[in-house]
Length: 83
Picture 1: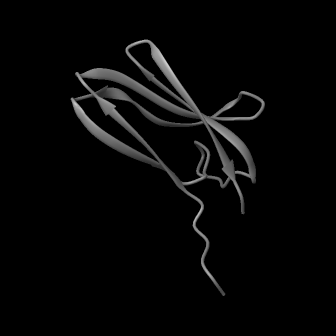
Picture 2: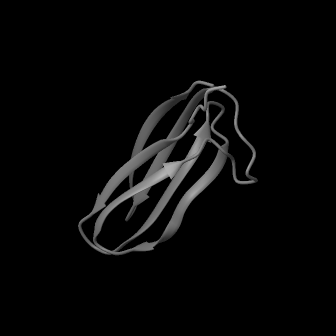
Picture 3: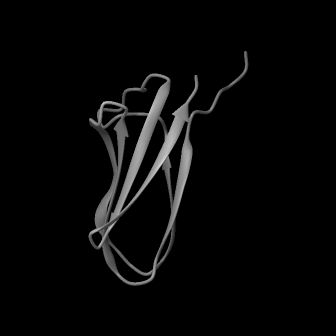
């Protein structure tokens, strides 16, 4: 039996202390997980999403999106989860 890891790491860097929100959405646009919702200090960050929703349940294979909001500016990305 082989192990399978279904996680991804989202890196970002802050040039000044900022409020950060990093959330995961499904293809229908529904928020399924909030990874970060806090004020963070200057520095480099790497946040790992383990393919689970806010209740801890594994999500299905498919397309997911992340939205990183820092000081009102948004960065978005697309991820494909294969199980």
